[in-house]
Image (spheres, each protein chain N blue to C red):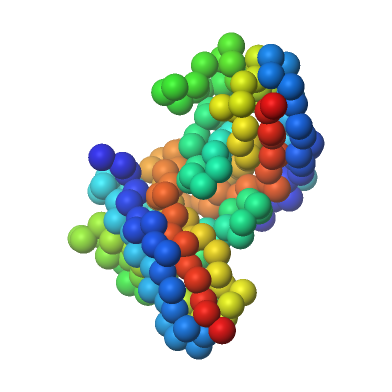
Length: 109
Length: 115
């Protein structure tokens, strides 16, 4: 079983809509969680991190963590074509980081 | 966040040769990692580069194939030895500070193509 699981997509949403990306993790000891955006041919770029239950908002992005369900999500409001990328979910357990396989998001103009 | 510079950014290599990738960070960092990302795949951790001691390798990766140096807290190298076309990947240097909540940051990556 992989530590972090994501739906590979692609997830297609129209411009202006809310994109919802989800991931689950298996180790309850995981301490923090991260969302990275990766454009084709580029390295991952950190968008948000969260370590407390609940929501954390930053601009158009909201990360949600539910430790009881071992579930992390990322909401992107007012999606733009420039948001089209692969989104990687990651967990941190002490000094190791585990990555999901990524969800490809397509935002259609 | 730390600024991480990698070089080369890309290279085309011949089968059987070796290539060393350098990673320079603009501040001292405790934790430094090397990842591989094969085409269309997610990130796979190769090893943790330990300052002043041997790197810690993940299952499936060995020191003879991927020797790593970490002479100080701002610099590391990864060598890909005796390359084959299966080694064609993006190799990423990344850094983090210790503790349970610190973020992981990536360099720009080194894209290797082995012919």
